[in-house]
Length: 253
Image 1 (cartoon, rainbow, N blue to C red):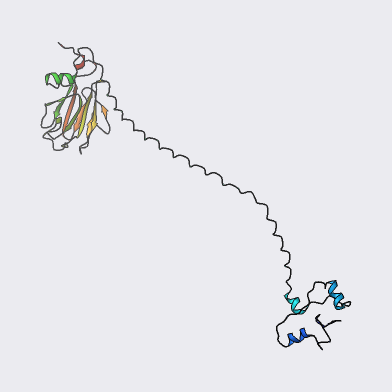
Image 2 (cartoon, rainbow, N blue to C red):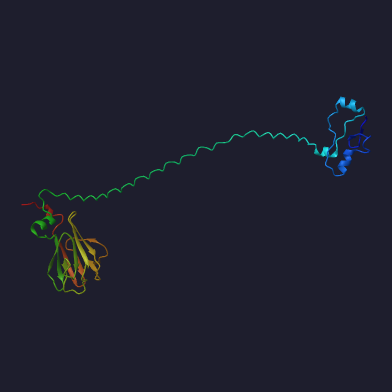
């Protein structure tokens, strides 16, 4: 027996079929698959069926379509980049401890000014201030004797330190009766017990002071028997204390 192969690689018995029954069944809609396997035919089968001219059938289009395609070799994953060393963050710097504010310095206590050193006194000497304190008497250091005016001949005591001159009864030397003399401080006559000197000083009054006929513009030292004029009043200066005498020169009894 000799088989025949169709153009699609099917083998059939030509004595029984005038055409390939496999292809006919497929064209008629009969679901049948007679595709010859691609494996080689056994030698004993070839001898039994006289298949000397057997050629390996070409695969049918359906078989070719159904043949699984070997997946392409999966691409090797890209070599991972060598891990870069991770920089560790620098340890946080601890904030500097706050500096405690300096304790406020207490202001130095004000130093009281030193009391002026008292003037040295001779042992058991009598000062004007001490005499006034002990006896209640303020001793004179000189006089102003009025030689003109309504109170001509009157003597006015001059004491240590400052003596104000004016028409008011509040003045140390009160020149009443002369309306040209200012009421308050027309002048000042001073005695300095330290150097035993007398000075006449212009005051704030309206009337001008004259010493020996000269206008007094600034403090001026007085000497014995100098003449002082204020308005219509003339006064003669008579000192008690000076180079020859001072209350400080006396001794206690």
